[in-house]
Length: 276
Picture (cartoon, rainbow, N blue to C red):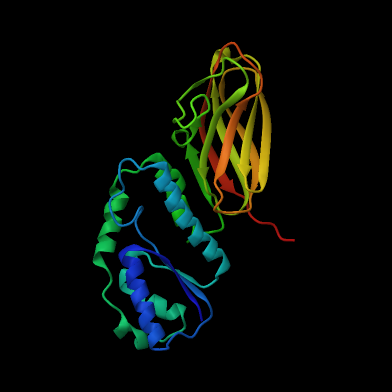
């Protein structure tokens, strides 16, 4: 039997110690299983008020790894802090052992992990954590449907590469990339992106392109704005490598004399797989 442990912090350490004791006692009996040590956002501390994009990207990769493992290993267990008293029994049942045989081997549950979870959930969370990372971390428990949002503040400004995207962008000038990014990973599969875009009343008639660039190729959506307002554009694309950074680009196709554009957010919904 192979036991895959995915997680860190006090909960991960507790699970590793307990599994080592079971292995030494030769008590494990079932097929391959996965144990996920669920922990508070960004380790076991309070969620900080400001989190860098690189930190979110790193945590997202770990959450996607857990999700991909869950999809491949049917027998899984998430160690939720609220169920800490039941962890030894749940793990015993997962690996096919009589709980009475293993309960004496279990160390006390890490109380700091339970308390840390409550503190982190009460702390204020930046929008990127709330709309992108938190749904990814929760998806391991319900992997059939993943819905995420990339807000404007995680995209970059085409006219000033490397700088954060402002709330509005001047369209005046030649056709060019207005916004790009965020170079975040997504779980593998088919996705539907819905871009929420705003335009000023003086935009006139302007053609735009929305591109999704993944390891599977570039998917483009073409649309033309004829008046100001808030509009949506849907685009379906494929993610073949769940750890490859995904980039969107909002491109103005023609030169313009005036007008403002705004990339408000991109909503991402993983589409269900279809049978052959």
